[in-house]
Length: 79
Image 1 (tube, rainbow, N blue to C red):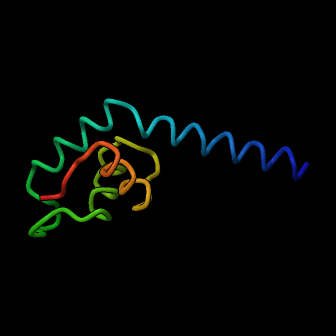
Image 2 (image 1 turned 180 degrees about the vertical axis):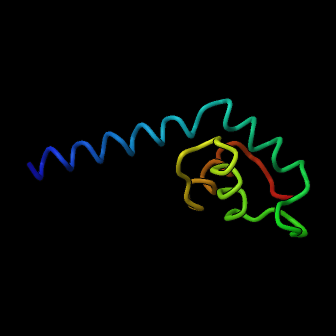
């Protein structure tokens, strides 16, 4: 039973990651960075981008390290 549970968790996390690296998500992140930052901030931070992506439904789950990988891989600069 423990093995089945572990497999289920791995599969669920794999599906989340695959969804997060879609072309649509990358496009949404690029558009988001060009908008004024949320919560009256002067600029976007990695954490605020993660939070906003989740709130807007772009991803179910995102941590700053994943956002950093996406930004680096697609050469997206925070302004």
